[in-house]
Length: 573
Image 1 (cartoon, rainbow, N blue to C red):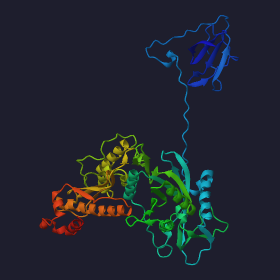
Image 2 (cartoon, rainbow, N blue to C red):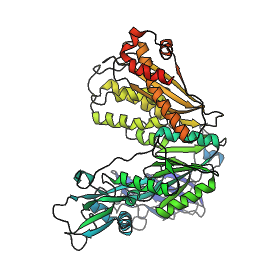
Image 3 (cartoon, one colour):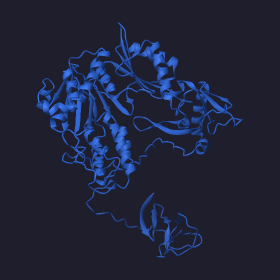
Image 4 (cartoon, rainbow, N blue to C red):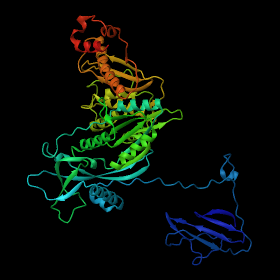
């Protein structure tokens, strides 16, 4: 038991109950640490001897000394007198807490050689290669004369969960489609995907009807598409056969081929057709099936598929049928789709946000801890082309603005500001970048904001249209914008600059009505195909001249130069 201690020569002297003195000696001489050895240099502490300088191998030692006097030497302990209340005064001790280590995200290899040297990435590559062989995607053969040969490469990526935690490693063998020749090894390449307006409309109807939404993902989606052309590909790096002169003939599409998305969509469409589904004419990536007992909707965005309907048992049966045709991953209830986080509230409402996407955008620009702003743009700002010097990094500007545009899926309030900064991507300047940083600061304070879809008692379609006349100071073109509601749920919006200069505010307002009219006609057709009852759509405009022109041929001298749009709106009214 230690009764007291005192500081002595940059070391500590402890007084024990049995009269011994323990010196924890880490003595400093000329900025060098030397321990003290009591056996080679004894001294009497009670007589006032001091520690001599003894060169020795630097280490930390605790040496025990027995004093010459038999009476213990008292060591004074000075108590602090300050008013601060510390843990030592009140007798509390906070235990050391060891934080659990976060899961480490594996580093993405920079080359195939590095990936092959890693057991984790090599196993991932082996699984991908085995999947190609098991699906009869390719076979070794000799290259025919005058045949085109397509190269290939490995692409590596780490997949994260919605909460940014590590999910799995992914290695994909990708064909170099730029080696293909049109008419020789590919023809048609177009493949449709479901529109974002369609997704929001269906989800709004799901919330109102109280339906369930299931999400499935197709494994190695492009490997299911059948090729009608003869395509030959080089052997993949790291998996060369004994005969390196042989090539692979592709029987099914793989990633990177120009016709791969189209081949997969045709295969999936044929499968859904055999199960009783038909594509809607308004959106060919939306498949519907109506029976006396249930209604099912299938939304397809490449390999991400949403299935919803009035019968949960019918949804489960459909997933089982698709799994017998393709290798599926049943992801359960909708929670993360196309980078959009979907959460259901206790009241049955649905919240769509892109918080993870926003965080991934703020990190490269070092704007995560920036000062948040209440609005994405100052209302008095009017951007021009030549108002400051050129921005030093145009590539950064184009990358950030291009990334911002995908946020318009769930953030209608960003439509105007992003449209403005996107008009200067060809030659960005410093004042343009300041506006972009204002948008990023707004996002830093609204990471979890998004679009809320809630139950509504009506399915009426309402649209609001407006125009900003001669908004552009460079070419005097107007900016138009609109938003469309299904009941009380916002499902469509847009802001863009007109293609021509409007000679009056009436013309600018009328042209935005033309755009909204075409949008509403498409929505009415889609609602009719989905068997969703609705009344006649209504358009609201704050320009009285537009309202009069849409029903009566007044002000002919002011409207004769845009009569085509005039007759289109008047006929539909």
